[in-house]
Length: 249
Ligand code: AMP
Image (tube, rainbow, N blue to C red; front, side):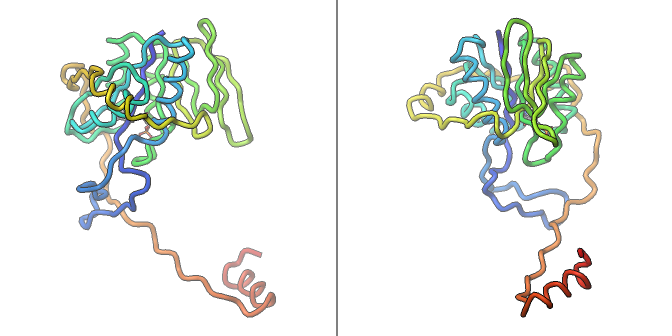
């Protein structure tokens, strides 16, 4: 079985995000970029399937600027077999990414596509669902366990009230949640080996996909600053503040 895994290049989760002074977006110049953390989990799951023999090829796909190659290399160093970069300088929204992934699926014919449950930059949580809809495939979202067996997949999902297990037919799209696994660190020998693994580069035009944005970002703002706390004198004052200022009791 062929497995495709989508890996997005995002601002590293440790970076303190700064909003651009013209409020059109966030500062990305000279900022550390990394693989979206949920996508690391998706790659790990694909590599484990590869090691268990459930998958016979794992292909990492990234969409965006040329530097997304580095994100693909990280996936290759973790154990993916080859990469596909859909290169564009255009700003990509989830629908465009889903259409590009659908076009790659049509070319490659995988039975499973693994994506992160959300990208930590746009927090959209849309791409996997849109992809499943475009392909007419099953979808298992927010997966904390995936078991594949002969044409079906049992996916345990993290839902508000606990865990839900669904049985789905393949082919399918799985969006992965935090508790699915703990991604490995790539070892130095594997980083070296990854340099030799192939990455194909295509463009949205090659795939016949129109990636023009459907949404316009009107304004990006910092969240309001938190007010400093106060130390209360006694319990009576605390109760008074909770009742009359915070109005929570
Ligand atoms: P989102 O819907 O934007 O929150 O993204 C959900 C998931 O879709 C991510 O975790 C990735 O697996 C995938 N994805 C989104 N954008 C891209 C991209 N530009 N390149 C590769 N994968 C992407």
